[in-house]
Length: 432
Image 1 (cartoon, one colour):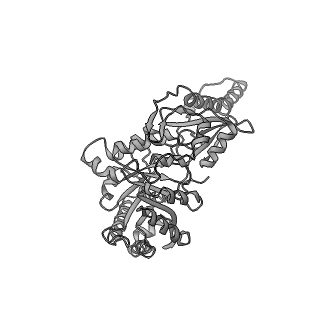
Image 2 (tube, rainbow, N blue to C red):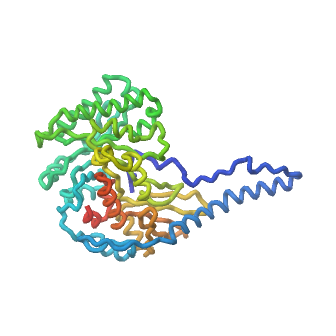
Image 3 (spheres, helix red, strand yellow):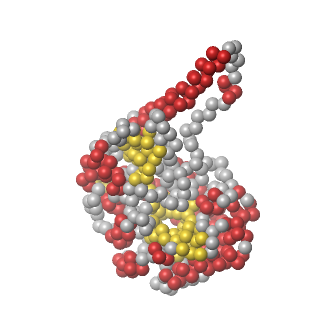
């Protein structure tokens, strides 16, 4: 989740499924030779022609008609869609602006993972760019809170000497949900474990992730359990808000809750929708919205299409009105600092791997590709052939793609959350 969010799998929907029903093949054949020819034809169609056409359509769709936008002039210079690999290799380490100056006044939450040490360094270097820092340290399993061994008090002390970003470690709720939600003693104990850890470690609150786990267990399909799940989040929020920060007596401990984007406007029971946002808004200080991982191995393409981001925000917040203005500041719009390297294979099923900044730079050095701008998604990508002559498509953030999403957050009045800051290129932070 190169590793991305370990908490979630690839999107389960294959947006490219071809459905050929048996009722369209019900021709009456008069002899066995005709039947055999039909079977051979179906085999060729499904296993040779369709995969080949899918690849050609993909390359045509993303490889042509990529309209250029006019450059955007910023303090670091022009940000443009018409870029080449050499510019990225030359400029990616150049941070042109003041490392402590913020370009946006909305909240910025940054995730840091233990398996990517660069994130710890970026958090210290650009500390003033962030309002919230969330190291991915904890799991709650069977009413045992695991992960304190990951906590780095020295690093936290350095951060607090350099800036005022709140430290809210992420906790993934791995406890079996049915027992946890149906037994008051277990619910109370789980909440107490998290609040006590905040007190003892002098955190400013927590980022909690549980919705995707509950969906996987089927909890959210049961109306009674779903209500208990919402009640648990509310109770946790109230418990945290009842405790004041050790650093600032005027500030309560905070709760940020991780949510995934709805899959369509026809909301399913397991989707986090506008009613849930409204219900929890009084108990939760922010919602970390995972607007990335749109594409997967079976549907290669952009990581977070801009139109999809707008659709998600419109669905959760509505288009206009006081409700949208009230709830928007609680949304941390997700921005990915990682990319994907998709295999576009006519012979096989394809595949994908997440790539970090260093992987991206290596690919640029080795293949010297032509970068293309995909206007519909608002992302750069390139195509290359590996040593086995297999075609790949690489989508990775650029200055322009990040700038457009930062501006989208400004337009809606939301904040942003970044997964995760150790995966990006240094000059990305110029934009924050």
